[in-house]
Image 1: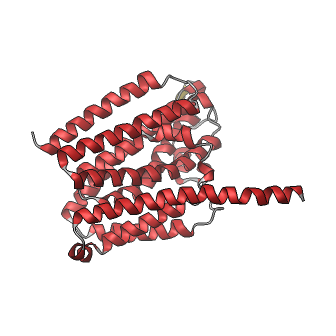
Image 2: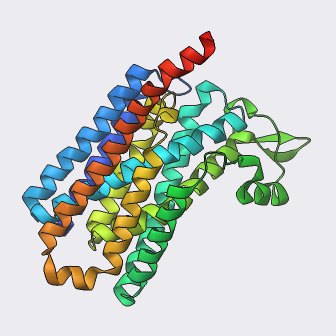
Image 3: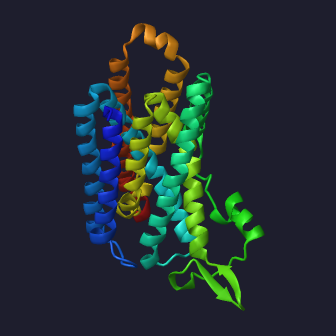
Length: 321
């Protein structure tokens, strides 16, 4: 057994055991997840990812381990953007609080399957046509620029999405949640509930985000091991992160700009890789990417909190006047 095969085996076992623990012990069907439970589950997934990072350092060496950590942090920060859209979807379809954990879990597990397929195709394309990386690089620079200059009023409406319109066209969809069911019978015919629509939208939206995040991770590492593991670890922790941050996600108003800078940085790095390799060795490049990701994401979060607090006294003064 090769080292890569051993790491894949350990990764598969860890994920399987973690899912059993999360579903069997940390979660209950139709139970409302509190902030304390969400915090506990978030720590659980983050510590698991950090433990795997240490395992990779021992088995694969410093370079791949740091690439995994950089990719995980990249995916984790992009997950916060996912959460904002997820909140809009749940709110738009009036999903009851007790159904959110199960619907979110099914949507995320579906997204993982689709991401694995997407990553497999992407890795295969890059392996056969190396110039595809330059297309990814241009796409990341464009996406980062668009994200940085996007206006706050560009809101997403789930009912206007192409996915929802496609489902409405080909499936009988009702305005009921079916008491937690995804398909119910009405006049002897199947009727798809709003919960079914939400699951499909969650998976579809995650794939849209994957169009940014997976090329970004490919810009950090060429290793399929790193790309698969960093993506799956970040996505599995998305559910607990949703319940932890959904009340505070609007506080991070500058986070999108921090993510945009990272995407542009990685895109430029992909485009100039040939020349960068002539001046900077691979280990230094990985460390530099990790530093840029940490600085931009943490900096944008702290700046969001700081600017929010700076506005409070002014708002209070305006109200008193």
